[in-house]
Image (cartoon, rainbow, N blue to C red; front, side, top):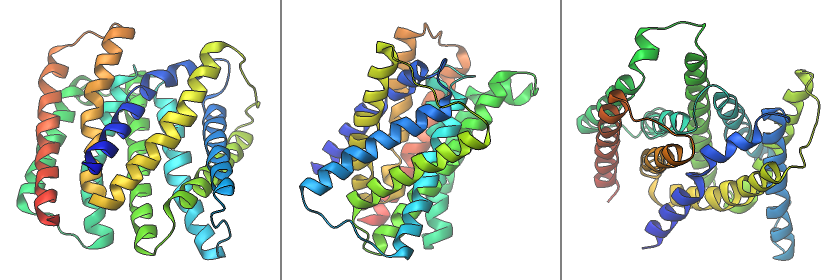
Length: 294
């Protein structure tokens, strides 16, 4: 039951974020919004840890892994997804993110020597077929002049970065890193790295005072970052990256519903055919991984 609760919290905190990111785009540069988001989230967690009088001093080696984790999951990952949202409607980056379950399985094999079975490989292949169907126009009519292709590649890079962050977190858990402190430091370091990137790009550090920007920023910082990541990474700790990645499979369905309501998304044949295939493939991967871990 605890795993189900963690799954539901993660799913319902994360799913609206793909749409709410749209309110972060415009006057403020997307990278600056990423910086604000995780700086606010890290400060809130640090205040909680100080009140609880939890340990906050760690070795240089541990801080290196906090930094690496933060760069992958709270900087590069979101930088690319925010940029992807400037080219795609909110549901499509969420669909691309569903491939994280496959990347996590491959990552577990490469980093932790957990070899996938034949059923896992079949499930991953089916999932890739679903992605191929959904984005068949963009893939087979490739052109750098089309913004959709740019958005697709940005989302794939962001997904790979997120999967790498999952592997780093699993490594940190294996070495008995405290989860909440790890998240706090990683979010802080990730926000600073993003700030450095914005300075290299010559981006001005602006802030928008509109209700839509501030309210979406607060949701993304508190629910989309703190609640979602604490729940997701706790789930990852309990069931492993492969099974935890199942959140990324169900999430596009809710994201598509949100896009249908608020962005007038029209369900074309490729989306109607490809999404069920993607979900079937990912479920096969998860079910197989579940059997191996019992």
